[in-house]
Length: 463
Picture: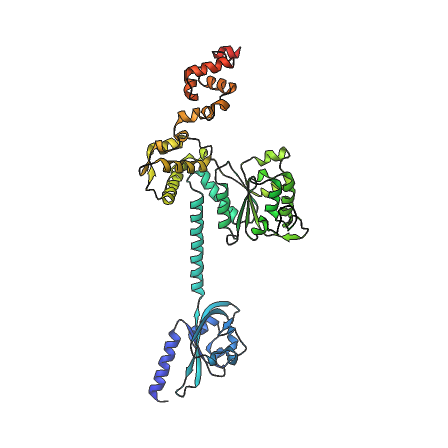
């Protein structure tokens, strides 16, 4: 080898040592011939420790054909005419599992015979950390998006609710969600599920008030063929359908006591039996129950089992009614307007200030669901791009309409003697005022008073 060849070889070695990737070469017998600085950094083995050793000492988790074989003749590289690359794990000198990208290729001499194999190793630890950060960022974005889409508001009550949802999602404890009809109990349960570790498994919901006792038991636990009339084949229940995921039981207070016994056993033992079968089926689910009733009062009246109540109420969450967080109404209104605009293809962009103020004065007994329905109503009525006060249902934007509503929904049924007495007392026995609120004339009020022997003034009724 002349001076030029020596200089060239030294120059190439310096270049290889300067590379960030690990580079090493193997002879056709599988012995390591060269080992650059990056291989020393990645594996912990020095050049002196590596050179001359068999390539299997590096302990890659996989090579060309699956798992790392016993030697170079078994790995298939000597028969490969192209380069290959694979992500795998390398076991370092210090028993650290290092994620790497491994590439290998044979080198041929002038006679087309294999002279060596060159392998490069890319350290993926930083990339893996970056990937994990990206995944974490996506998860955080998913959390924010999920909460933003499901739980809308800026009130302290909503901030507290969001905090509890986040805490609940980190646990597998059973959850009891309490709240009035229309407050969004299922949306809350949905958020807890999709923020938790069970998010990749089913979210199965069942409204317990929608089914009679016999069907409810079958829906929950399933049945076997022939167990009752109409059971033509085996059927899974919701417990099995929700395996590894979440079972959401809405209106849990409506479950008959006989079914409560079986539900308690399923919750305690984490196993069920299909109707008509004695075979026990293990379950792994998280239960979220919801109710618009006061379960503790039902327990006192022996209408709901106390032991089941405490099994379900491991982590209770109460959703506030809309009347207690009226500062959220403009945000909710904006959300529903955008949603309806997208669904109906109507170019409506917002509600005007007068209608927003009127809607905030209403108490919303039907809560968020009623507000959403009011917006849907307005989209049917509206003929312009900005919703006006008159586009909304009358009872939601007019105090006078709201006051008289209980008396005019069904006059024959609602305007009974005691109702009329209460109305007169509210109006200080002014029959004209009572008539306006009831949507009736003063004469009609007087006729009702005469029919039911109601005295013409308050003093007489007290006597």
